[in-house]
Image (cartoon, rainbow, N blue to C red; front, side, top):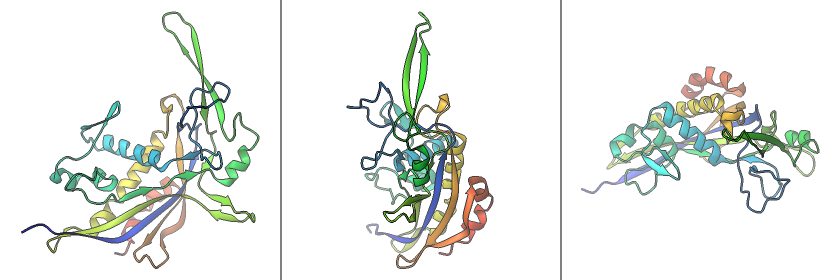
Amino acid sequence: MSEIKSIKLVGRALITFDIEAMTGLHIGGSDAGVEIGGVDKTIIRDKLTNRPYIPGSSLKGKMRSLLEKYNGLPQNKKIGQGYIHTCDEPGDYKTCKVCQVFGVPGEKGFSTPTRLTVRDAFLSEKSAEDLADKTDLPFTEVKTEVSIDRVTSAANPRQMERVPAGTVFGGFKMSKDKKEIPQPAEMVYTVYEITENGQVIHKAETDVERLTVLLEGMKLIEDDYLGGLGSRGSGKVAFRNICLKWRKDPAEEAKTIGRESYPTLAEFAADFENVKNAIKL
């Protein structure tokens, strides 16, 4: 008998937050055709506003990379100059919380939908106002680094573009009539139930339990860095004003689980088990 698989979307957890740059932040953009005073490494910017932003792909990719290493997963797939992990066998995939949450290539016959979606995080309006006309370039600083030739002792200076420390991504933006519109950064985590030939092979409760993976990933990023030049001081970030909402019925408003807002990741983590256990499937 052929296998008939059914995938039911049970609900979605919407985790909103702000990201504060604790040190200068460099997430690289394209340098093609750029002429800004000899800056060697520029940052990525929103084409419409010229403001820096954090791509969801950068945040999601960094979380996955750190979680793979934290869980000691084999780096078995070559991407560019490096290696990443992806499960090759159904049995491995079934128990791999990283691949279950972050996904595997769609051509894998055993794959199920990716649980995690990460949105881009845009510069908050307050940070944009604070940085206006105070930085080397629009909303950014230029950091000069000097490498020394170990043979000749010749200095080789180069300039890097960074978002200054204290900048916040998320929070609020201003509408045309000067009203604040909430615009936090967001991760959407989808909970599924999967059946095969009428038998449940993946319970929704398992996906809810794996929400812990996101908390682990956020903690790992705070301890590490986001973007480039991290080993030289850039990219330390902190998650602020975290809120988790749960929506089971698409026609209904998402309901806040736990506190309306957790100012820090440490406070969110301290209450996380209560939040997770309060989700009603």
